[in-house]
Amino acid sequence: MTTSLPIQPVDTEQAEVAAVEAARATKVPGWFVILWRNRKCRIGLVMLAVFVFVALLAPVLAPYAPRDNSFTASVGPNGSNWLGTTAQGEDVLSQLVYGARTSLLVGLAAGTLSTVIGLAVGLTAGYLRGLVDEVLSFFINLALVVPVLPLMITLAAYAPVKGLWLIIFVISITGWAYGARLKRSQIITLRTRDYITAAKFAGDSTARIIVREILPNMTSLVVVGFMGACLGAIGGEAGLAFLGLGDPTTTSWGTMLNQANTGGAMLTGQWAWLIAPGVAFAGLMTALTLINFGVDALSNPHLRED
Amino acid sequence: MRYFLRRAGFFLATLWAAITLNFLIPRLQPGDPAEAIVSRLGGQSQAIDPAQVESIRKMLGTPDGNLLTQYGDYLAAVARGDFGISYTYFPYSVTHMIGQGLPWTLILVGVTQVVSFVAGTLLGAWAAYRRNSRVDSVITLGSTFVGTLPFFWLALVLIYVFAITLNWFPTGGGYGGGSDPGWNWLFFSDAFQHSILPAVSLLIVGPIGWIIGMRNNMVQTLGEDYARLARAKGLPRRRVALTYGARIAVLPNVTGFAIALGGILGGTVLVESIFNYPGLGRMMLEAVSNRDYPLMQALFLFITVGVLIANLLADLLYGVLDPRVRREEAG
Image (cartoon, rainbow over all chains, first blue to last red; front, side, top):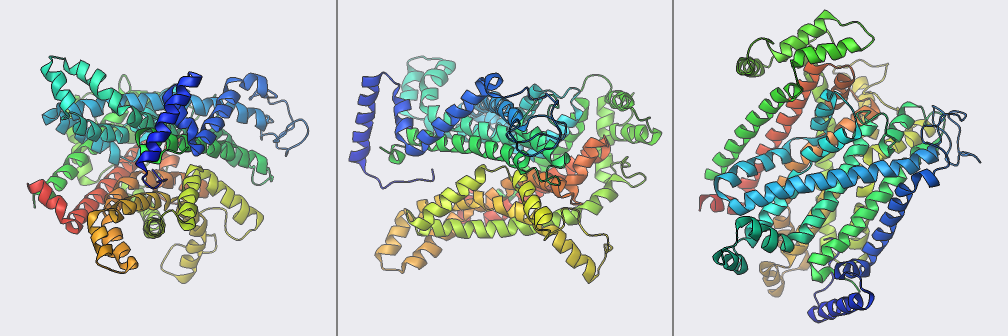
């Protein structure tokens, strides 16, 4: 919502018609055309595609295995190790490439899980109102104010096994509340609309009304919420891994920074080991943030660009 | 009045929920939690210290009593402020250790967050005042970009550049070896010098939320009818922006401040651990890595209750600042 163009109803209408026509000509879904026409979003989509490509083809693209420690330890960038090696003698570039997998997996899985939780809680509270709403709203507000990272640390400290799925689980159950609150207030404004009343009089069940009448009108909010949850999850995983509370067997940008910090990257002057994970992380976050601009434009025609 | 009572009621309910959550988390694992923790400690190569077992037993209550009596004992202990003995800092009590770390965190977080809030709100207001100008795009795009950087990484880069390469500041710690904590000038100047890099890493990212929130709110309030009327009757542009736009737009940021505090304290944990700063956040991580469960539990509860109190204060302040909330709740 940070960009706002002057309101020009005629132009946006034309843009929409043009978008629909373009979609018809190329057989691409209309929403994708709207996203693609937004310049910032287009850059974000291309950047994300690069990260996905790198993550999928990690075994092909990475020069070595991420845990192969057969190199000279703690050396700077050179011909065989383009970004240098870790204190254990592993290749930094290979770890960086495999780290993209972890970040995308955590973003996708934890983003989906917390969106589903937020959707279920928000929809139930907003649609049923009354006592159910009071109770669920209390839990939403409670989850909003509890400091997330200390809670994550406490949960991770008690967990008997430290796997990647545990991290995804911890991130999801601590990060659903913000989306739930937005969805609840959206559904409260939607549920009194005429077409909902009509559907009720037509004898549709509550479940059918929610799934068929209300959900389609919340698509952009759900997508924005999902993107926000992805950003939060990727950041949360990096933070936990950096603190050494992540899965020690997974290679992620957070564990790389943790090892760079404890392995003395700063004292030996290995700037590449220190800089690379941060730049990769910032690049992925930028990609998702830019795509969010375009998703905003999906729901708000005033924000559309040609 | 009804508004204030409702907020106070919410505070008490969340306080109870936080205390109960703190009671339940160690009991989520299957079996006797005390046995599980002790056996995990036994799995370590080091021998188990009886004092550690004792403090865990104390934290979790009598193992043979049922959950309800454990809960009762726990509530009584919390009411007395008795969280047992810290294992890491034996023989000091957990309460004593929290008292040690609290001033460091309170000053670091307090100062940086007030500065972030004021600076961010002003920058956001400036961007909204000069909407669609170069200033606006520099501020919004700049803060969007900085917001994508992992700020614990920024802290590492700051250490690398300013502490190790340039040697302008110490790499970490709360004070140097040459001074003792106390009310003397040497200690204060030393502590100040040690706090600059941690403070800067919090200040780089701190204002971003406020900038974006304030800008978007104020763009909206400046488009409202009352702002249009103020412009139409010929009030100076600056005055319209300040008393009609900014004054109302700042309100959501006040409640935002309290909600953001939970996230800020999470960030403080990272910063304190990177700079080895003697506050509560680093103490929590130390407790986790030493498996000092009583200290960790008490810190989690303490940090959560701190955030809840800040939320209550922000809600009360909001009620004073904005008469509409009071009326809506009453109506």
